[in-house]
Figure 1 (cartoon, rainbow, N blue to C red):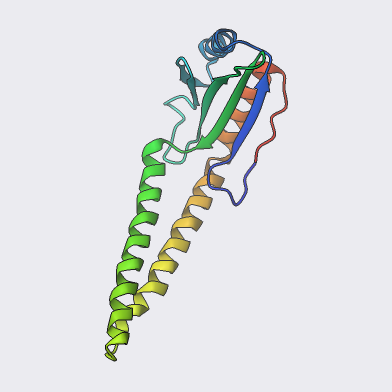
Figure 2 (cartoon, rainbow, N blue to C red):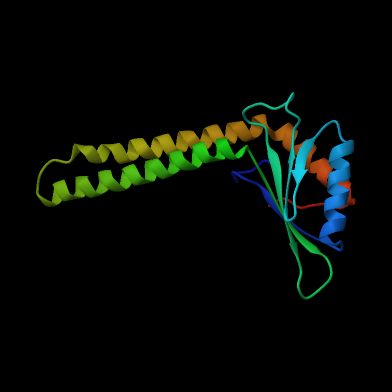
Length: 166
């Protein structure tokens, strides 16, 4: 399951109604001492219990969608860290992108005015910082991999169905 993807995901079709799916998932979470979570009308989250959680602990977010033209439901699953951890990385990448844009515009305008533009050396530095952030995210994913496998096997066991991660 661990890959170059930052947030592994899956899609699944089940021959259940939304209420049957929610009932089965809620019951399994209530009976489990290994996992916690919440189930709402069209969304569910499966988490590691608070006693075992750490900064890199993953969670499985499930989006439940009914079909309009046929029986059953469509499930989208997304593995990832807590939303706050994801937000830190996303905002860091966004800030590096915006800074690179401003530095690039300023540096190129200096070059067009035939002035020296040593500020352009910041762009490779920003790229290096982005690479380091990516590698940190991958290392964090490796730290949480065992817990991700546990959540995945728990989910697969709910409906006796193999789910392919992409």
